[in-house]
Image (cartoon, rainbow, N blue to C red; front, side):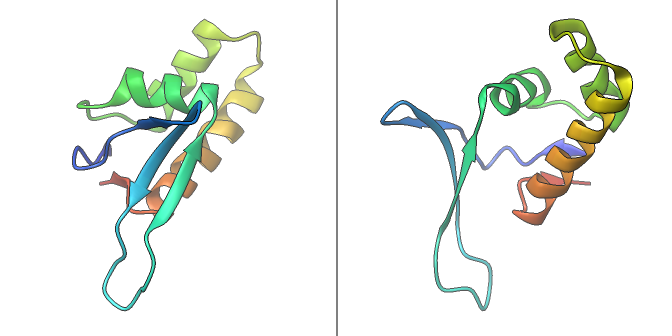
Length: 89
């Protein structure tokens, strides 16, 4: 999977945001707010093909977190980003 390179993180009023254009049948642009960890994963993985284990390894290297928590967090992050169309296979 990878982050669709048509999306960019923008800084707006101190927040890291990604604007997601409406898909067919949707009427509004969505705004996805990224926390510090999400921005770290984005910056580390943008323009790369990756799997969940790659992102988990990044979290384990940077944060004091166990593998189970890191895996759960990454799986949730991927699910949310896929749902918004930001991560593609």
